[in-house]
Structures are given as structure tokens and as C-alpha cells.
Length: 403
Image (cartoon, rainbow, N blue to C red; front, side):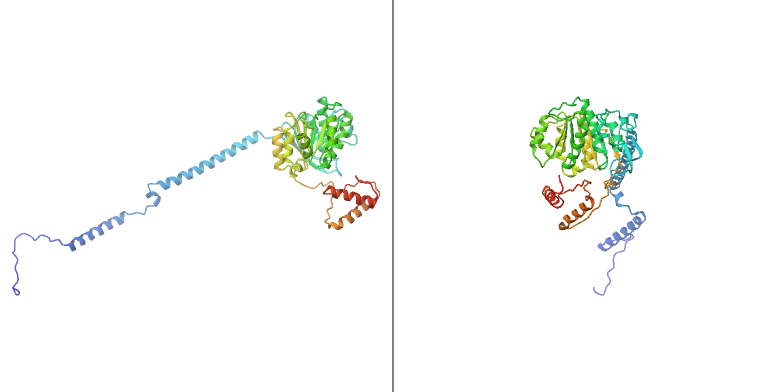
């Protein structure tokens, strides 16, 4: 058996292919290779954005479109705003520089007047007091001046016509008479001459006692020939004399915000008849923290009133206050510049000294400028106690009268 070959039967039919696991795997590998070769030619790298059914691409395009639309809308809005501003632009009247006759010398000042209808002929600046055609008793306080100062000549035509006004001018420019004369005419027209009642018609707010007294002196002198009475109220002094004066009847009240509020809250002062209101040095008033008392006081005045606001500068807080309490179209007069600057008509010398050296320096300055005792000297102190000490010190040293 071992040495013999086994012969298989031979038939005329071909042998059937015999499949085995090995042949099956080989065939599969060949098929895969063929498919991979075909796919290599057809494969193209497709961006991820397109693969995700175009969702990411469309969202980005939408964002871009929105941005474009927003930019176009903004551009259109800006164009419309510019058109509206051009159409409703307030007329501005720029005037040639004028020579100031108030203060420490003549200096050329630029004058800019803005507001509704400022170019009308009736609002032309005055060149003389006679041109105002005011009564002689009203102009009696102006007889020592040659002509109106720039702020007076430009503001009087508007104020005498009943317009609300904002005046930007430096200290010493004649602001007090700029609003004082129109205030007197306002009261005379309301038949208040010589007949004092408990309720005043004119109110002037001042940030400090010193300025209030200064305004009161000017308005008392100006109102006396017209039979008008005024009172100055401020803190740091007894209320009783001020209350007695109010009760006796006054036409004009000049005061600081704190004391005015006290008198209003105690029902000693009623402002329901006040139809002419002045805020002098409004910027300084707000800087000193008087915004809330000022708003309270203004709310107690007559709703039908003429408002005048004077300020050395024009900060945003003053602008907001004007928008709230003034006519929507007030006249604005700028003498010089709106920027904060020292008065160039006054020579100012600043010396930084040790506390112990101040008294000796004050003596040296008084000996230099007050030797003839013809000049009037004003000495400021920070506190009332210090002012009293300086008064005693100077009286002992120079035997001079201090007030």
C-alpha cells in the first residue's frame, strides 16, 4: 500500500474548482484593491463646510449679510441726521471783536450769538444807552458809563423782549446790569413799582455770600429810582432781620441756595409770583454741590417765567440744568471763549508761602499798595474765624477800619 500510487478515476468533465478559506481571503483582497484604485481617481477633498450640508457656510453668509445691512442702515441714519441738522440748524451770528469798556482795560473780545431768530433787526446790539429807549429813572444807574458793555449791548434786546438767555462771560464784564436792567423793566411792566408785597417778582441765585452782597448793592442802587425794594439773604447770619424785611414786602430777592431753601421750607418766603429768575455763576454753583437745592428752589417759582443764566464756562451739568428749566430755544451769547481761563484784564500774582510767613507778607503788601490809604483793598479768608483774626490783627497793626 505504501509503495503504490493511488490512481483516481478520469472522466471527460473538467475538474470543479475547489474553494478553500485561503482562496476566499485572497479574492476579497483583490476586489478591495480594484475598488480602491477606482475610488482614487474619483476622490476629491471636500471642505468640511460643504460636507455638513452647507449649514455652516449659510450661517456665516447670513452673518455677513446682517453686518452689511446694519452698516448700510447706520450710513442711512447718519445721512438723515445730517440732513435734519442742516435743515433745523440754529442760526449763528458771529460778530466782529468788540472793545470791552468794563474791567481793567480795553481788550478785543469775540462775540457769538446763537438761537432762534437772532438775526432779526430788533435784536441788533446796542451802541449806546439812549438807543435802548428805556426810561431815565431805569438808566440812572448807568450814567457813569460811556456805553453798554458787550454783554449788556447784546443781551438787553433779547431780555427786554422776554427771551430766555444764556450768557457766557467772565467776571467783571457788567453781567449784573446785563440782567438787572431787564429785570427792573419786567417788574415795572407787572405794576410792581413802589408797591412791595410779601411775594417777590424777581429772584437772583448766587453761589456765595460775597457775590450775593455785591449783586444786591448794584440792584438796590438801580431799583431805588424806580421804587423797587430788594433783600439779600445768605447763611452765616441771623434769619430774623431777613424774615422781617421779607414780611415788609420786597420786589427782588438775592440769595444763596442754602438760606433760600431754609426760608422756603419755613414758609417765610414764597416764590409763586416770581416770573424773572437769574442764576449767576451757575457753573460755580453746581461745582459747590448746590444742584439739588437749586432744582428745589426753581420748582417753587412760577411756571410762566423768564430764565436768565450766566456762567463763566459751559460744562455738561449746567447745560442739562438749562435744558430742564429754560425755554427749548434760548438765546446764547458768548463773550470771549467758553473755556475756563483767568481774567486777562486783571494782573494776578500767585505766591506760595508758609503759614507763619503769611501775616508778614500781608503787611508788606499793604504797606506797598495801601500806604496812601486811598486804595480799597479786599482780603479773602477761607473761614469766618480766620477773617475775624485778620481783622483784629490789621486794626492793631495799622489802626485802620476793616469790614
